[in-house]
Length: 321
Image (cartoon, rainbow, N blue to C red; front, top):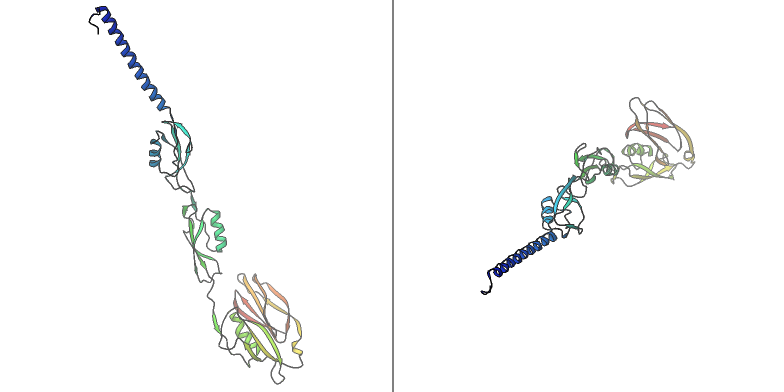
């Protein structure tokens, strides 16, 4: 300050400096305030928090000066429990700093009740499970008296509550064990005897060829395929060459009837097999009610008879005249 200035001038200069300082301070404060307001309202890019747990999502949003707001907890087939399954606004949107980002937290897959599939075929079980939002897991096989491909057991058991799309493991029947037999040597035996020996085991006489031998009884077995001692199974077929008379009268087809009355009790599967000089064949195979009368027309050649089976068990033999 100039020493030559008068006291009045000095006061004016001092006042001016004070005013200037105050103005400068106000300007600085206003600038800082404006900067703070600008930063506060500056828009930020929303990060992607889908698939994060709650803590990670909160940390990620706070690093961008945004807030986590949980809108709801909801089951979700595709997102594990505890993770963010939805966010609003979506990733890469712009929001002012401090704004909340609304999220949905998954409760995991919805629960379902396991249906009963024991007794169904494996294909039917797969359809039933899919309809209940479940799927087939491991399939184990075992021999059983139940029909092939029938479900014998399941894990989890019926009426258990599990996550949807959970696996249900199945134990499936391979059917009964196939019985094996040794083909007997039937040469020089009567064809009818061969039929009675083989048919109860489920073995079919597929083809019979005749050769004229007037010196032998008709339908005497001359040769067989497969030969005696061969291992065979039920449902296999065998063939024979048998003797026949030169007159050929017995080789003419004829019409006949087979009659059978169902026994009392419960319904059963009735199977009737016919044997004649042409081979063996099944002429009837149906479920029948008790006391039903069955009458069948059949064409046979040579000596013939019928064998009756109830629920696959041999019941009786009926001669065919």
